[in-house]
Image 1: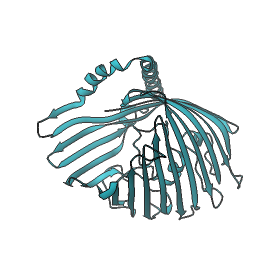
Image 2: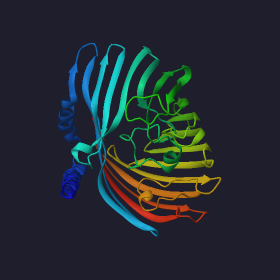
Image 3: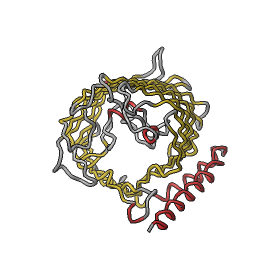
Length: 375
């Protein structure tokens, strides 16, 4: 039995290493290679007719190589970050998606994690869409962005602390466009933590997002502002963070090759969770269509001790919590086939204070190299 587990581990790491090595030379390829990628990605299209109805494969494959070294310890691993597979379809005004999350780091018998998307949407009119059943519920700056479109290997730690990182919940939502470039999104969802479609356990939460896009001005070529409000009827069995209210004020600005994203967010704690607030400032420079440089500063503050969590890999070194957090990140994205196939490298310095001195202090550096692909 132990031999079988070790063999799966070796096989997975070998395949992942081969993927990283084989994709690295593609960074230097010219834009002419896009036609070859077009041919490959077209294989996912199973059916399409003249009326716009279609059926196609959907999914994403993501891998990380991570090295973290802190005063409190170190962590390094080569792992499959995400693998999701399913189907997208459209018939007249209705569209459907069914997708499963699979853990390639485990043996085949233990690889199924959960259903992510299992939703049906109706285009009620050109400016309004209704979605039912299990769906992604995004709020905060990075929580509103799919992992396939991020310019950093991991979401910022403000999102990690405030957003409901399970992401997919059963419920109903509606989104649409209004006059003068305003848009909205609203929904009510079960906080049930089931791996499939379920509303029987836990409680509920609601989401209201309001945003507006702006055209050129003397300060930007284009801009977008968004406000998210979440009311969470917290429950000890819920699959959400322990905040009764979350508010996020985010903005995105673009001028020539430069862009800037910001987020100011706060959460009212419940069930023993402290109130917290955080700030993200993320400038980016596009040196070409395919190479994008990014920096990010993240700050978090907790009203009481032990209110803050560390990020994914830092928490593998230190599993305690703290009360004040700083992170400085710098990285580069190589868009081999837009966001459908990209290579990311990021270096970060993280410091978290632990006033209670009970295992949450962190001070160290981290390096992450990632492959991201979706279809």
